[in-house]
Image 1 (tube, rainbow, N blue to C red):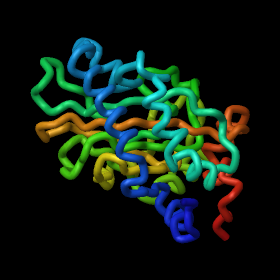
Image 2: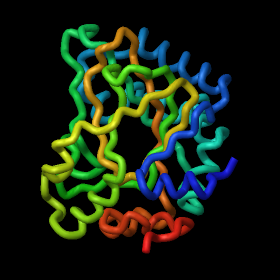
Image 3: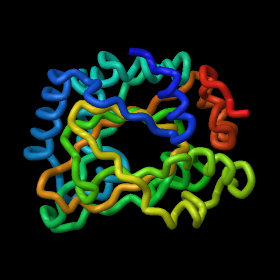
Image 4: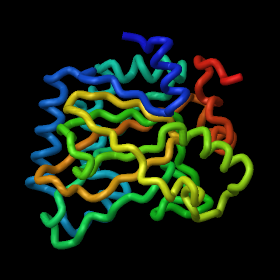
Length: 248
C-alpha cells in the first residue's frame, strides 16, 4: 500500500515513519534464522568494534534471503513514494545489539550521529551519505533499554540548518552540541515492522540491558542523483525528495 498523505506529512515533520507488520512473516523467519546462525556459529568477538561501526555478518551482505526484505516487501514501493526513482539496492547492513555481559569486550555505544558524516572509521573529509534509511525489525524490541535505536523527531531539519550555516568538510563533530545533549526517542516494535528514516535524522544506539540480542536489517537507499550532490543534500533536506511538497 502506498504512503498516505498523512504518512507523508508525518515523515516530513518527524523524519521517521514506521509501518507495523509490513514485512511478510516468511521473509522475517528466513532472515532471522540466517543472521542468528551466523551470530551463534561464525561471529568473531574480537571484531565487535568493526561489526558495530560497519556491519555484522559482512559475508551475508548480498544474500538473497536478506535482500528480499527490501525488494520483495513494501519497502521498495514506499521508498519510491518518497524519492521517486531509486538506485538499485544490492547490500544490507546488519546490526546486532548484544546483551550486556555476554562478551568479554563491551560492545561500543553509538553516539548521536548522521550516517556517513565524520564517522570514527572514516576520514573527516570523506562522505558516505545517502537519501533514506530503510530498516526491518528482525527481533522484537519492546524495552527501551534493549539496545533500541533512538532518534530525534524533526532533527533532520535542525541538521540541515547546521550543515548550511556552521559545518564544513573536515569538522569531526558529528552533530552540534544541542543535538548531542538529547538522548532521543527509542524506536520500539515487533519483528516485521518497517521503518523509513530520513538520512539527516540524528540517531544513536545504546547498551542492550535485556537478555536477547536485538537484530535489525538496514538498507541505505539513494536517489539516483545523490552521489553527485552529497553536500547539497546535507544542506537541503528535500533535495532528494521530489515527490514531497516543500514546506512553505
